[in-house]
Length: 262
Image (cartoon, rainbow, N blue to C red; front, side, top):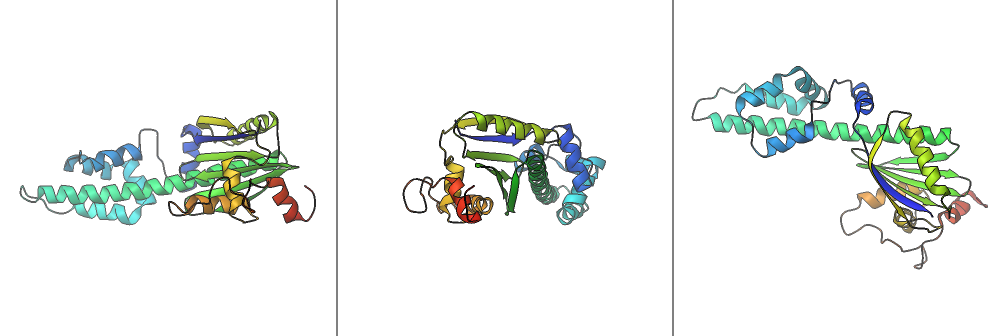
């Protein structure tokens, strides 16, 4: 019963504390950058509301740290003198500048969440006896884990969305191994929500591993990042092998790479 699953990092107190420490900010649970971005996109804020946000200790302090140039532009827009006739223009400029600062800050937080998740996985993997290799791309990081003939390939996206795929195990052991790894990750402060599991039952792995193998790159961590970051319509074709038939079992890829049996 080889498995493939997806899950999302849960932004709980422990994860928020790790992010604050990593980025040297003080963002509490009351600050929701996604919600703020939605409000700004809908033009629902007036000038006093925008000024209150920009001058607030928590949000203003975070934006000045995470997005200093866009935040400075928002402050400058707010300092523009406004009359009854120019007020709409000033509000639009301040709202646009603040939205840009929020977007930049959100991207920094999403990237940091990805890095924290990868670090938790590689630390947990070492604890459990896996060897690991990683490849960091623009918006995703690949993690390749090996233990005997077992391969676990993970792809972690900005914001902490995680895809995982097993190969080399044919019974329920892979599900136990995944839960064991996730538990070790959670001991490092990263917890998950929205877990979905698919039992593909294939020794060679599911679609994540198949697509990585099809890229003809012996480093699967790098291949899975390349597959995720290709322009739409140019991703490696799922289910294709190096020779055009079924995907080659990933443990054979490892045998060729190491020059012997796994």
